[in-house]
Length: 314
Image (cartoon, rainbow, N blue to C red; front, side, top):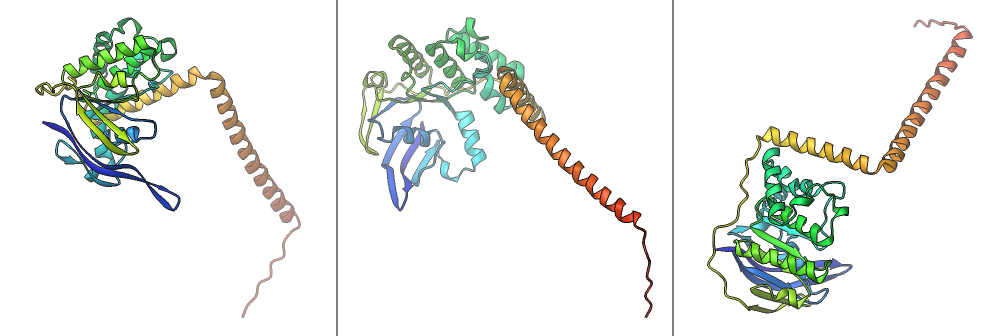
């Protein structure tokens, strides 16, 4: 019934002093909630979001997800938890500029080891659902801010996204696009996704059913403005995973393809980099050849002088 139980502090070393950014945070977040974390700049909102998303760890205390203590998990286990459990939505989208909308949405499923056909089908379905069916072949530079945020939402849902973490999801959008994004997040919450969003905008926060307020690292308010609906089934992605060796090969192939795409998108930079490498290698080869030639010349001059052999016996 619960996805997260948080009881912790977060400290940072600042020279000889210890700065407590989050102080005695005590929260229980239930499955299916839509929670808004509000507060002034510097109040600790983003730090709290990072800890909830397992991007950071508490300095003291505990953080449990479905009964699992996250502090006991190894880095690979935390990465698996982030990949399978969370979906992240950022203020600045963080889409790969050289990839199309479809390829950006597919990205999380590549690391999950899903088959190529399966992830393409799911990415297509998610973009269709978010009204982006006619933009799947466009790169981010040719999409508006609202359209880019829809792509990032689809990416967050690619591996299931039972918990959606949204950091200022409307901060870079105009009012119309912002309202559209909030409508999508509410629909996801109605479908059973747990939505946790960070915002300083009170109007955005009012869309949530529960508002948590931070001030100077302290939790000063936690109020429910809407009744929590009965928990439904946890959303999951329906896809088939590759065999392990196929997954590794698929990831290598995708990385190689993205590298070629990035090189083609920045031809001048690629050319200058290759030119620098060629000059460097040629310089090393020339120096080695010059040294070897000098050594051979000296040995030849010495041998031309003739030698006298002296045998010494006891």
